[in-house]
Image (cartoon, rainbow, N blue to C red):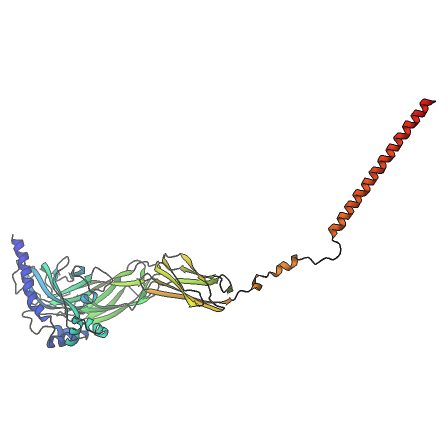
Length: 500
């Protein structure tokens, strides 16, 4: 029952804190002037003119700051002092331009305390999130809200969009050693950069009044686009938060994922001394190997230093998410035409081959044929093409008139990062009218025999055969007559002998 009462009290307190601040979120002439200066390097203009007993450190924020806060005990009662070992609830009223630009939902935001001064595990609770806009030009803001703004008005106004919400950390233990509460704001979508801000809790009471600043990565940059196999500079702005002593022997090191390395130098850089509220810029030369197949490389930045007066060790860790794309190695081959000449009324064809030599597939591949005297343009959707595979596309050509047929085959697709890409190949071929001479085959001339005169050979052969037959018949008749005469003479001789 006591726990339930504590929870209800904390939420009532958060609501009470949010109510007056929300009233200030509507821009007026003074607040607009203050808010518009956020685009400059001086973010102190966001500090409310009166914050009661609060002491807000927003100098390391990047579009995010705490406009008000309160501290309660676990029962929900507001407290004015925080002793070492106390367990407290911290309620912050946050103005967040960065999350508004990304249009993220409250459940997609992860807020964690990044300090050894306070013990807290888990994420802060985000509630009462509202959309607001602090455009310094009220007329432009009104046009955007009523839908009459121009495209340029909308672009100019977008940078002033922000979220206003309550951030609650329950059962936080104060360990002493400082009063600065640094907070890391990250997102479920790890490709969005980490946001960092802090608030100084004036209620903290520490026997050791010397406080060491915390180390944060305030800025990071890796260029416009990082491609696997190509070196890029990872630039970091190392920031020391507010404190009463300098840090010495500050060292910054990187923990790299697989297939990510440095092109030169060491994974650790010695920065030396850093004073409170001072930033030091350092750069690492990083190269993802050609075999890197992911889309994001999570690079961990480790920071350490020692308080000059207290000798206290100070550490900090931040993860930088670097999107990495594969090199585009989609290539096309040579065009192949079915013939050097196409006749009007006939149909020819053109073929274009392609291959994906990259390590990631390409998607939504489509081909389009355009040009003059083609008969008609054509379109084909070819789908996705996996890495290491090839294919080809064919188009028919039916020219309408004699002359030159010129065309372009254009291939459109999306690379592994979703970026649209285009590659094209042009060609030219002649078209001719068709005539009867086109059907004449000179090779047939070799089969034509010259015209013969006189009696044909077959007639002479027939005459020879007939003459031979007649000779044979005559010979047979003569032989038969001679045989018959001999036989008759023999019979007569026999008859004479008998008469004697």
